Image 1: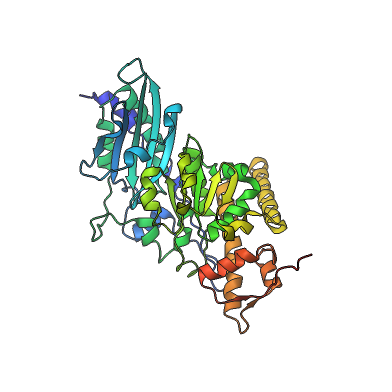
Image 2: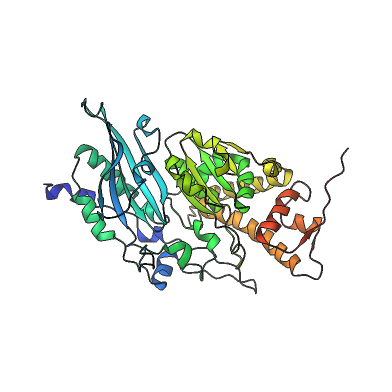
Length: 435
């Protein structure tokens, strides 16, 4: 039996001030050129009939058993289907690191688990005790709130195995109170319920990170290659990112990739495959990935590189590559790509200077990054829509330059974009003559 004193310090699952959690979502521009701010996630959630803070559908503890391997040790509710969670919440290769955090997808739910590895003087456990404590929710946008609580709990589970009372209290306080769909599953809120209020391609804008910084790391890590990833994201390609453990920072790269494809023009992107994050995947996800038309995921298992039917783009550290001949031209950076990256870098430096000199903290790098690419995307689709609706739906070199693209180097990208989004415009720019 756990004493009351064990519980009090561990029930700190809402340390983040509410004002830091309610970032406004950028609104689409109105026809008259003015802009308005839609409600933030918390307000919008109440308006649509669900309460943002009560979204936890399961809490669980996974352990590594030297004879049975990964296994679910404990969970609430007890009848929840957690098949495969034991592998999603302990990344392959985690035995070599001390701790990690992992975002993943389980059916229509998203999960966050915190992993820790503690040395023990036990022959039965072969000198190491490894556990993960995790949660499931219909939305990945609020999981970060409970990161600190999960980190505390996994350490608690390593030191006091079998002490579940803090987790029981957490579940009772945070369990989902949502209407059930006809199939008995809890309705996923952000993607489906926000469609009338926010373009569904925008939902990755909602933050999963706290404190901020993942966008800055993403830019530093990929550099100019971000422009290559941006084009693949806008074309809704299947992007798989490989990295050895720890996998937490790689899950953030998945999120950042999704943010590259945000569009705020109503109606654009409704007919194309939804660009969804899978976060961490392993071999148990192969069957699920085989049915996906568009996704971003990460893995620590090198065997996926050989499963070329499952992905279009493979990212190994900073190396972005594709096995599809039709996509090879998109790997080459052109002068316009480099100019866009230079502008992004200049805006970041100006923001950092303003924050340091003026103490202006009203904006952050994450907002700047998301808005930069959203504006690029909006400019492209605004121009394409206007040309398609005109008496002469012909795209000229001037149109392409106005979109911030290169008339020659981005020809393949534009052709694919027109076909994917079903835009009825004709590209007449010829390829340059051979020398």
